[in-house]
Image (tube, rainbow, N blue to C red; front, side):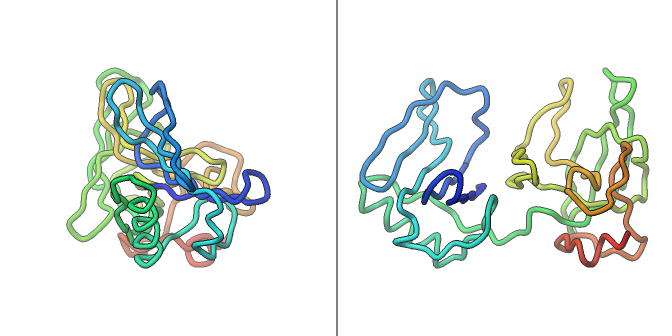
Amino acid sequence: MISTYNKAHVGDVLMLIVADHDAAKKSVERKGQVARVYDQATGETLAWNIFEVSSLLNLEGQGQVSLTAADIALLNDLLAKEGFEPSLVYDEQPKFVVGEIVELTPHPDSDHLNICQVRVGEEELLQIVAGAPNARVGLKTIVALPGAMMPKGNLIFPGELRGVKSFGMMCSPRELALPNAPQKRGIIELEADAQVGEAFSPEKHWTV
């Protein structure tokens, strides 16, 4: 789930994106403070909009925001009060983490993409399709996991690139909007002692 809030430009609305909905034909059901955005064809819930959210939560920041377990409980209470199924799930996992490429094979239908197996936790391996020219086995980099929002607003969900499933994105310094990012293609290269699974910290992981 991706939680976004931008009071200055959108208003006092918390947007909770729970599924990839770029290709879906959407409808909206509004009850009180809550609007459910859903796929017309399947009925699947794609997103929730919580209006006048500052009456419930004290949110800071602009863009993707972090919600606590207590915040999620309050929002589920609101969904139930307005007649919706309380279905929000608390997720404390960071969405930008240190990853290590442990396997790399050429994409069978591309001359520039690679299928990478990327370790993002002690026992967690993700398949990520990437076109970075500097991708190689052993490289440690920053991975945007499903549920991440990039600085420019792009949302990361599981998808496919030329028929091969991909479950995240390895990030370049430019994509992370890091200061003095080089203006060339390539994912960020971390020191060999960077800890796999650690949450990304610009102060720690970007020292240019």
